[in-house]
Image (cartoon, rainbow, N blue to C red; front, side, top):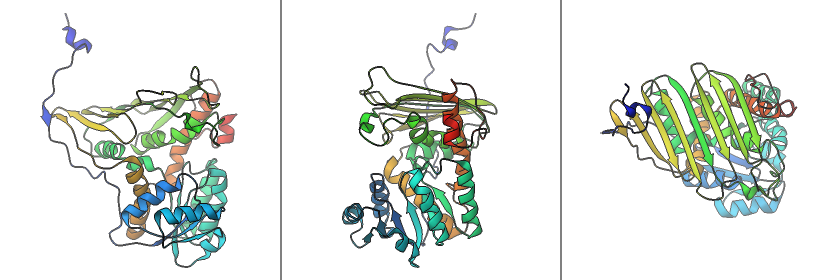
Length: 370
């Protein structure tokens, strides 16, 4: 008879092991410090500017259709920068090399196109586009003009997610067969904002970080199955519950999002492979304890940084490093289209009652909505 311990009723104590040193910190160029223009001074722009100020980057212009917003951001983060409501004049400035374009997707599309036409390298806020055809067109425009176009998938450089990804790439857990993401947090802040009432809000605006993370692991997605629902008693109009399963060659990635958890917030990510298991867990996106369990024992890397500072610095830092080294950035827009294909497949699956949808089968948010 099999011993009861093999039924996972009790796990064996693991010996402590040294944590592998991995390059999870945000990338930065060695010497290249171009002048940057931030386009759009909405709520998320504060996270961009705070990270750039901490790193000593050169933000020369903050442009917004509302001058008062541009001035407020300038005064708070870059007092020597110009604040303006003339975006066209900003993009025409020959001293500006990089445009960080932050507005919502529909407003962002023509701004990215204008920035590329003006010869600027671009960092686009996420989600990059709402139609893969638009994304491919923008990528083509950037490539034709010898420019780099990157996407602010800032979750890639959240310390815990960056470490997990680097550990997978280093082969520390062997061939991956499962990825689990489980997030419980209070997303009721959207009440009264432009986000409230968007049915696919959680799967598009929020889950894009983790679907992008899955894509960044180098897996081979085959199909996506997803659902969404309203939580009992939730006050906002947007459904706050969603889940997605991504089938890939040799395994499954499961992602569950609960935006209605008012108490006891919890964020957990687990990656299991043939040779080990990685885990990260904490009460929020920035407070995470990471472990690596292998035959050598249990390693507990002590990570530095937070999602917003390191995440937003990582996306811009990677773009600048890629420009300095004349290479494609890891967060390049063309590769990001694979992440968006997962997002659109998840939204389409949820809209169709949870039937599987192959990545790339649905090419736009409008088509995904049905």
